[in-house]
Length: 402
Ligand code: SF4
Ligand code: SF4
Image 1 (cartoon, rainbow, N blue to C red):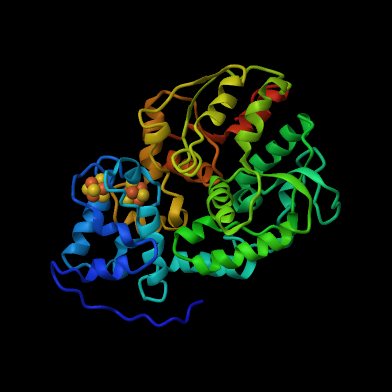
Image 2: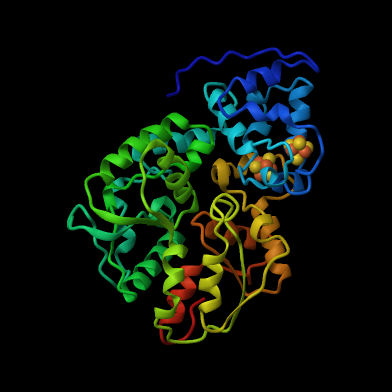
């Protein structure tokens, strides 16, 4: 994986060499279609806190920058907001992964990203955790959690926990909340436990397509062992992989984000109390803009007794990115050197402006990102949690949690 030869290229000012090199990469073709209209400038979350955006990337390549050797290559979060407005369909979600893949053999790959690739390659998860700990989060959930290797009967919902709900402490809180809610609703569900490996979509978008293809082989071999009707995941990145990457390769599963599983069931949730909370919701790029789901999370939030939803100025199709997509989750150190503030900090300021008590999310990357940003921006009183945690709280009798 790491031993391909890198050949630095000398590019000519105002020459076509840079575009020729990028256009030759599958997925890189559209960069040269830019005609400089500037529509992407106002919507690129990196440009809003820095000096970036597709138009600038196009101009830099046009004037001799070798994108493969430039730090700009790693700043795009593949949030997709530029593609939404671009009249020429300049597709950074395809361009950046293609150029990053070509650049992987070079000296400019950020060390923290290399570390994540290595951990994923060796352990099957971005945390470098022993796979035997995959189901450890379920201890303390208060309800039984079925692991298919131990109980391989057919199941309705295969719950694909993914890395951050498996291993991050705040993700584990949310996973336990999901277990309680799913059990209370009588959902027939189970997990893979130690057999689960990451679906690897963020590693793919960060450039490691080879690793992603290997993961597809491993994941589909494991899935073939069991009978299930649907795969449900809390991770919009994993959901995106199942819908837009697995299916075109012939691995067709009914895949849902967990909010899509629960939204039709809101009428059956056994509420126990009102929460009395003003909340604002952050649309995850890979659930909303990339896969068109804006309503399921809001259906759930609006059903929770005592929860009042206030929207941020940038929401739904124009939601601001948390900075975690496309490998950005692991590149905060690099981003810090090229932006005036982290994207997560900008988003927390927008959330605080609504007067909300809680910034609610439904992507496992976002709780740790925003909780950290709330502290660094002086908004410690802004609570950050997943929707599933609020649902779980409103199902418990007793004082609300914090
Ligand atoms: S995909 Fe998002 S972060 Fe990347 S250039 Fe476009 S708007 Fe900016
Ligand atoms: S919106 Fe598209 S065509 Fe217009 S400047 Fe941006 S990348 Fe170029």
